[in-house]
Amino acid sequence: MKLGPRSKEEVGGTGALRLGNKGFPTPEQVGGRILCLAALLRRCDVEAALNAARRQGGQAAEVAAFGREAEEWAGEGLRRWITASGLAGYQSRREAALLGKTVGAWTQQEMIDAGWRLEAAGVLLWAVRRVDALPPWDEEFPRRLLVEEGIMTGDPKAAEAFRRGLALRPRRQLEHARDLAELWHWRSRTTTLQQRGQRLPEGLTFEKVVEMSAQAAAAKGYFTPIGGDFPALGKAYRDLDPEEFSRVTSIAVERHWALNWLCGFAADWDAVPTDT
Image (cartoon, rainbow, N blue to C red):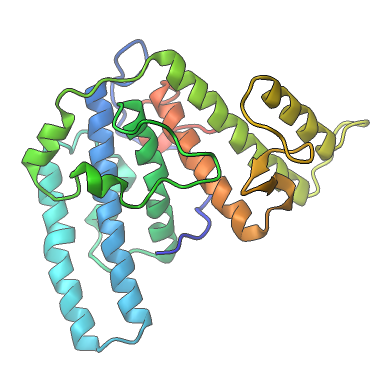
């Protein structure tokens, strides 16, 4: 499924965990969160496949049969797996609501938003040392990521084995990655404000603010600016076309969301703030 722009991030969920490690989630909580995201992404793949079959004008009877079969293993089956794996307490309210829908009932935007959660899952896998490094901020995590981890099989034993022995990276690494995520998310929002005609204090321009921020980031060794701007997809950020801008924005939002949760900005996954 080709992902379009994710919807605006929202704040205001329920079902908060009690965070350990002085405000940071425990390795077990991160593992549970990864598994819940894996379930969401597995369901997303099925929704996308069923939606594609409908759009391509498949035989109604065959599409209906596919939907019924998918409901068994991607609807009821996933919900049973959540319960059997002891993950109900880690699942957010929004995730539970999505997985509670009949297979085939997701909207296009729900599929897009769930698909982008791979970026959040990738960050969490990195945080528990299952991924060596975060991809560049203009590059998505590979779609095969969770499949290779062996946690999308629907097997409770695989889920239990995955959660065993996880360890978080040092706090300073998590906080450094969080700062970078906020910086890239800020760059996206700066473009959005500029497009909306936002006015800056006299003597300042968006171009100047971006250039100063790019220079400060370069001084810290974060990246080498292109044309006085953040580098993205081999060019200056300001030169991204709408589809490219949507892509790098979605990457930044999802990673910022996951890293703010990891750094204790909110215990409730549905209510993580992503202010810049």
